[in-house]
Image (tube, rainbow, N blue to C red; front, side, top):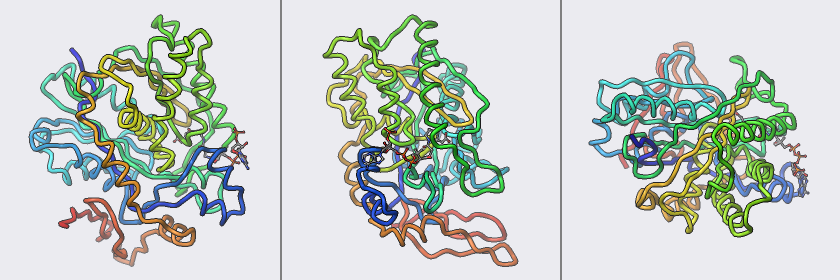
Length: 391
Ligand code: HMG
């Protein structure tokens, strides 16, 4: 049975911070961000846009009423959880109006967990071929003002509908994961921002890529020659580029090498404008590739490198389905990104780091900000209140 990604939706914030503005404010050469990290801008969320609203918006973009009846599992992969107990997927299930007899859970392992969620979804559909599973990777990457990681923040959510006979990409069975207990990036429960060993994390990313890819090729008797594109987890595009160079294969024809290079550039286009969206960034790379490359065709195989700090990495592959282009919205995406409201650095510092001020009864109200179709509007007696916008 062919199982894979049937639809893909995306949501990000309505606000943007230009890297050139950040460079000026932090007295850094703008080329460090534009060339050293390959970043143009970062999506910035206000308090009323969280991983739940982003996740619901990303899925709302793609689901029909029939999908909502067929979905029997909703998985939100995130490392920016809003509750230690209740899964973000439960809120999302309600906001989207998905039929009640569905399972809703949250999964975590830094930026990696959406990859495990996809595999779980695939196994579920194998057992229940009529079922559809909604997998959403939703995160807000926040490191703090003036930190080394500040230039690699961002926010976004990718929704993927997993079904039999998918319309975009069939997922192959051959997968290979690797786990290493390392402290490259972590966020203890008492901290709003992560602790990061930046340089160490980049080295681990690249080493996990190389060692997993070497073993993957051995186990499954495959090589780069079999793939039209390679998508990477993109904490910032320059690291993905280093990853791309790491796996390069000198035995490939120059035409194939050129094709891989062009497809790589298409895969980082959205991340260059959005920044890191943690669990979703690999899949944002896939969406960016599919929506911007003119040369991909049905049957083309794509390899994926998923990486989550801590660390778990995985390589898996899939191939494109006839007519996959019909499921995509390249024009809409670029227009939406261009419409984000540009923030000054001072506005970004206030807006991105605003925290709810609870009164003695556990209530908090927020100023109204621009959000997508859903908004986190208040806290009432410690309960988060979400609303669908009517306009
Ligand atoms: P930094 O100290 O800001 O920057 O840290 P740097 O000094 O390393 O410079 C960055 C690049 O800019 C270098 O390029 C410089 O040479 C270059 P490279 O040598 O690496 O090719 N540069 C310039 N280029 C042109 N003109 C100039 C100039 N100046 C410098 N004038 C760092 C950067 C990424 C470490 C930091 O931003 C950070 O800590 N970020 C967060 C951690 C991170 O993103 N790690 C990635 C791997 S871990 C991961 O992927 C998991 C993650 O997504 C989380 C999860 O799994 O949950 C993060």
